[in-house]
Amino acid sequence: MSRLQRALELVRISSVSRNEGELAHFVAEALRRVTQLDVERVGDNVVARSTGHHATRVIVAGHLDTVPGDASAARLDGDALYGVGACDMKGSLAVMLELASSDTPRKCEVTWVFYAREEIARGESGLRELFELRPDLLVGDVAILAEPTGGAVEAGCQGSMRVEIVLRGRRAHTARPFTGVNAIHRAGALIERVARYEPRNVEIDGVNYVEQLQVVEVSGGVAANVVPDEARVVLNHRVAPDRDEATTLAALRALLEELLGEEDDFRVVDFAPPAPPSLNDTRLQALVSLSGGATRGKVGWTDVATFYERGVPATNFGAGDPLLAHRSDEFVTGEELDEFARVLGAWLS
Image 1: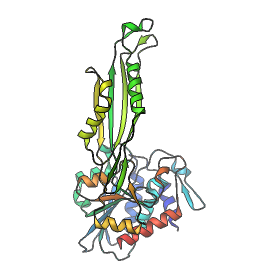
Image 2: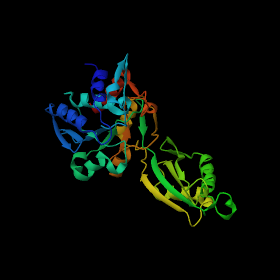
Image 3: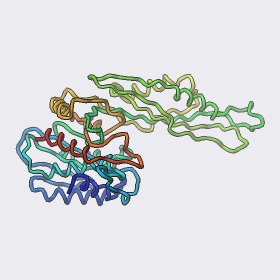
Image 4: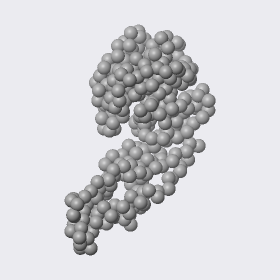
């Protein structure tokens, strides 16, 4: 069976976030057939650990869940596998299962982590569940997140802040708007300010990160004949690894300060911290060399930050074009899977 066919098996098992049970069972059963692995299932998370005596332990992790989609529509077309999760990230999961099942001698111990609920709120993450319930299973010296990176090392990750702003006005009759204050008109000025935001570029250890700020939700209005007294605007801010929650919030407030009044609400709804590149780790430097020497900053947030918070240097490295993730025409090629298997296999052995 080819790597694409193995990946097709996984793509055809629907595993939309919170519904990973069937795929977790498939993965656990496949790994339990490997005599050199200790396998444990914690909820819908599966962890398989080699049982040798090497001093160094490497973690290779990937998420089981996908965004919503029709798993039955998965198909092979030439050298490409199309289907929800093909690129993000069941192609890489198939390679992980293959390498985990191999009896190739290695110079390190390996922990293979297949975890649930990565594509939804961080508070539901299966990886965080493992760290809370069974941190002993995640002890390691370095970690690889098999997110799609096009076969390059994408170092660190951006942080993500979601902010809700409620702008206040004063109700009035729409025939006499001068007696009130239109909160939606106030929101227009704030939206325009965000639309003119100039992305901030930050270079850390030779890796570039570009910040972004977007309005992602707008709501308001009372009735067709009422000047609205409230408008709600939600922002998403992607931030570089040189900022924490406090400095991110301070910079955002400074950008919007003149448009906000004391009566307005401004609150952080969610913050996922960024992670620096960690490329001073010699093991990750070796991965960069094996993959061709190209590195770039990860666009978006990944669980590299979860490992970094717990003192484990980590990076993103996986098969598939990250620009295809979550698209209706998402796909991964056999060539991409072969190269991912070659590099990861060489790095481990």
